[in-house]
Each structure stands twice: as C-alpha cells, then as structure tokens.
Length: 270
Ligand SMILES: O=C(O)CCC(=O)C(=O)O
Image (cartoon, rainbow, N blue to C red; front, side):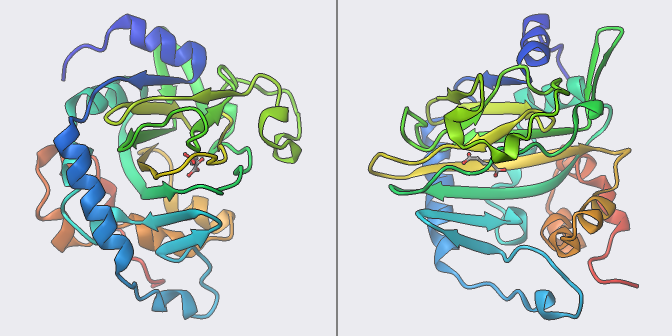
C-alpha cells in the first residue's frame, strides 16, 4: 500500500468524490467493452427470483435506452483485475475502515435514456472524519469505459452533499432542479470514487453512441449487506453480490481479501 496524497483525501472529504484520471488504458477499456457486448447478448436464469418471498433485481435490467448487468464476476473473469487496481485499492483502504466488495454492475446508455432519481446508498451518519482519518461505510468506484462528455448521461452529484443532513425531499426533485447539482464529466479510463452518502443520479443521454461504465461498490466490513437488502425489501439482490468458491479461487490475494466476507455466506435461506 502506498500513501495516498493528502490533496486527494482533502478533495474526497470536501466534495464526497474524486476523479482519478487515466487509470485504465485504451486497450483495457476496449477489452472490457468487448466483454460487456458479449455478456449483454447472453440470457440469464434468474430462477431464484421465482422462489416464494424472494425479491430482487434480475441479472439484466432493460429500461428506456439503458442496459444494466449485475454481478459481473459471476459471469466472467475478465473484470477480476478491476478489484485489485492499485490506485483504487490504496484509496479504498485509506478512506474506509475495512473495504469489502458487495455490488458490481455495468450500465450502458444510449440516446433517450432519461434522468435517474436522486439517491444515496447510506445516510450522512455513515460518513465521518476522526483525527484526520476519513471513514465512509460505503464507497462506489465508477470506471469510465467510454468518454462521459456533456450530454452523454453522466453521473451527477451535489458536491459536498455527502454531509448534508438538511431534510430536503431530494427524491422529489428532477435532475438539475436539485440545488447545486453538477455533471461529472470524464474520459475513458478515468475512475470516479464517491462516498455513497453523497446524493447522486444518472443524467439523460442526449447524444449518439454509447456511454458505458462499470460500478464496483464497497461496504465497510462492519456492515451487513444481507440485512441491508432485507430491510430494503430486496433480499434477493445478495445473489448478485456473493461469489461462490469457484469464482474466488481464481482471485489473487488482494481480490480475496477484498471479498473475504463471501467465505461465510450462502444465497439461499438456511
Ligand atoms: O451513472 C449513472 O448513470 C448513475 C448510476 C447510479 O446512480 C447507480 O447505478 O446507482
């Protein structure tokens, strides 16, 4: 582990996010995009969703102009090295107590994708700074595989709103109506790391072509992902989070360490 520059920690704390430039090279972006093309062509058996009382997302979700694929390492080993990218791992370890990977997904947007809704994964109580140590209990890493230019359906956020406890009903605000909203642009290969206590949403895609990103979301080891989904009424989502032993057995040491909680999980009720 290398020391994370204090400038980065300052910026992450002040804004709730940071953009790391040029983490993935062009070849790697192309390889990941080609694999996503292949994976989006496949069909997925979500039979577990039919079990009585199980609620959760299907593996592929198609909405207006947009495709989303959940649980990436379950379907391919091509994205395994995303988990152990050093600049990201260093910052995860600096800004979390003990990062553990939970949710992984890809979103591919085309012309016509509308605004998403404003949301945050956790409340600001789950973000703290004590004696200079940042601690967010959930941190999302977004890997830009294509350019995210204005109009491309970029991530939008309100910088600093990871600490906001003003009870504005943010979910009732459409897009730019939320005061202070900004569009996060970047180029293929950049990585956005943001605290999930930060208000964020996806913007509409008003341009031609594809905007494709990967999302690798980490929670603190002190936090129980199964209970989180159960309380949210989506207990089946854990099926996308837990990688079985045959997936983890191909991982390197860093990838195994960042997914250690999965050793103690099974996806069907006892
Ligand atoms: O990049 C986007 O479109 C927004 C994604 C997002 O907010 C989410 O997947 O929770």
